[in-house]
Amino acid sequence: MSNATTNKQPKFFKPIFAAMLSALILLMTFTGIGYIPIGPLKLTFNVLPVAVGAVILGPAYGALLGGVFGLSSFITCFGMDALGTIFLSINPFLLFIMCFVPRVLCGLLPGLLFKAFPKTGAGEVFGSAICCMLTAVLNTIGFLSLMWIFFANDLATNPNVLELLGGASVTSIITLFVMFAGVNALIEAGINLVLGSAICKALFVLIKKFN
Image 1 (tube, rainbow, N blue to C red):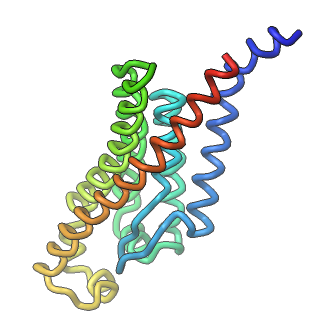
Image 2: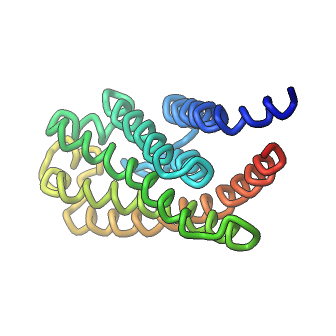
């Protein structure tokens, strides 16, 4: 009986854990605890559950969790996020791409990369740390890059955006983006590196005990 139970645990672990991480992403998004506002932009910690899921569950679940993150981010543009609400009125399709695609990729690609690392000892620890950090970097670069590609003109000329930015000049907006991208990437990467790798290490130990 005990052997049958043990053999069933891996089968149900992935979908159950993915559901828990999805619920955590939604909780962090819609309660606001997953964000720290920096002017009109936000520093996000919602990428941490995506990183943990990508490493522990694999690329498919990483992409799924990234999709949950991206979809919830898009929903906040319906009145919960000032800049996102403005972008929604300009082009909802491009806004959805901006919110959704980078988040799916930041879950998928680190999950694929982790497959290349040894699954024992230092290789597993190093691999999970690198992949958790990469998740945050891909999220920042992808999201802000698409924002600039899709909405650069609106950031410089749209009166609602300019009012939100306090009447900033184009030069100031570019500076803000560069500074935010750098600071954001460093902080989120650091958090994911430390917390993500620690959580993954603990989970790997726990999983091996039951297998």
